Image (cartoon, rainbow, N blue to C red; front, top):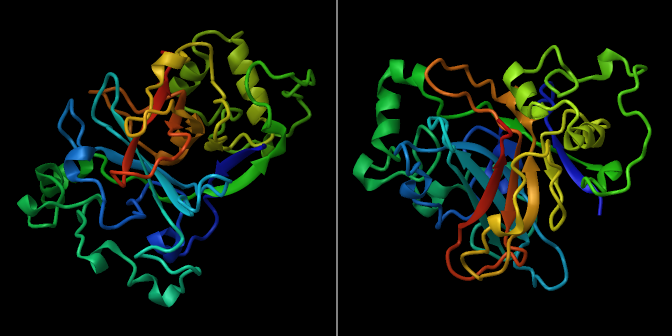
Length: 336
């Protein structure tokens, strides 16, 4: 199957309702548009275990599965990715997967009308969210905040300027890349020159890896992994050349497109599903081009948030029993 690509159009106009739960968005930043309201993860599940600071919401993908054998279990299905912006080494990531049948307690079988969207919120089910980050609040903080950290940030302007809590929000546009169907390193390669100088600079989006003037130097160094002859990086550049601004590559049960030869996981590096025991499989990856849109400030006190590839692995059966927001696994490929 062809690889599905996610991109951001900074110039398109997104209506606010399109980013809310009843419209099942795929998006970067902002606050999470939770799918299952009654089972939203507790604040403790989204707190970095190393620094004890709440993680930041990075993105979510609406990824239903309509395949034989799934018995309508995944009519609605969303993956949520969070990260710790405060840890310097071995940054913490958390991925949640949740899914609903077509007939469920929250959404009608047919698409919601804009007029009723305001009534389909966690608050309508008695669930209160943190006013700062949009994650589940706690009784300890009057059901207004999820943590003392976010309470202090809300009440202290200096802290608001110091900490990243909510990222810029963008809808993710979805498209299909037929040329990326065989994107692994071992696939048969077209020997044509992907870097033909006839490509005009005007056709290279700002912030893409081909926009060498606009990209962050640390990201560029990370992308090359210190070796400009790295065959994985050459394959990476060729595979993204038709859509260099892509921020997501979705290829469930396929293979990741690695950016370099370093930090590629072995099979035993990917843990099995902790709920059903099945070996997790690759589902999608977040591309370094996303960093261009996040606008995270540089810091002199800690390492800025850079990465090569963030590859998300999930249960191949998308198991449904037990916990409703199930943790999945993310592998960070950071060559440096």
